[in-house]
Length: 237
Image (tube, rainbow, N blue to C red; front, side, top):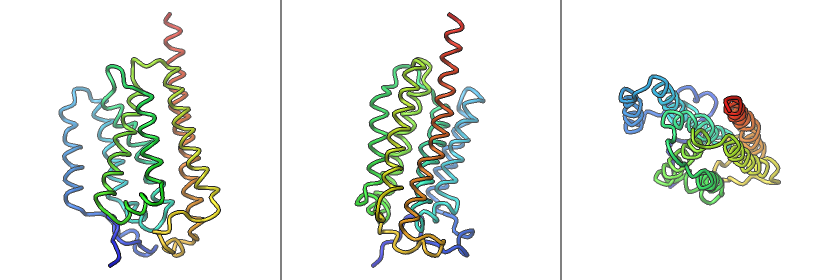
């Protein structure tokens, strides 16, 4: 019996706008997460938290979730939204007050991202709901840790820039391997990409580019913010 991915079977273009995820447990968890914003002491943190939860909802509830069953590129964009958009927003809502162990956070988040893209584990997550959620939660949690280290008020701007550079570098390397691979690595998608006008290798190449180019701009923005923080500190001394 063919395993059905958590987000459902791969949709064709005519089905995509009706392919919302209505899992009641997921929706209840997201609603509870958003509701906790009222317990936060500062309105700015509440805004970051709600924004981060909203991005998570887009990833798992909107048709993007189902599209990830059809296209590796959609799954790649899904990971980008979690790692480079939702994670820094959630990290900003709970800034680190002390040492955040940036190197450990970098190694952990990088390791989880690369594990996600190991073909055997990718296939397992595609076919097994428990493995899917273990890797999704691991990806989000490890990148929240990474961004808390980057955004920590006690971290020097130089160390933040070095973390950002290393994080962007490892993601760019993975993206390059996916983009320039001579054959498709994720056969679990089968030929579902054909109905979207892409062959499996083109789908994988697009996924690599989505991980590569938008992530470069996101990481670059945070590097600029860290540099500005450094200049501001220097001007006060």
